Length: 71
Image 1: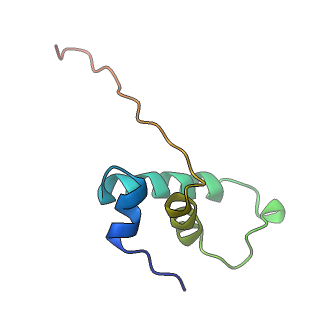
Image 2: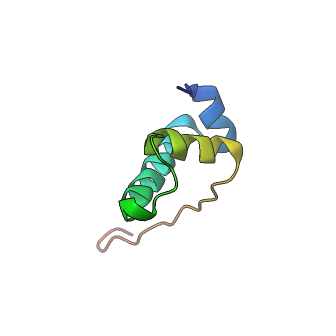
């Protein structure tokens, strides 16, 4: 089992918290795929998502949402 340190995650994201949030969102996307077409086998999706993030395979962008009533 691969263990990802906060420094590894922070190296590819702006900070470790954002990196974990991005990896969790990607793991949810992977989980939505049909199981019969999944090429991942027994690898946990969170581990796969963190590996993709720390290796640079996963690209993301931050989108700000407009909230009504705030100026």
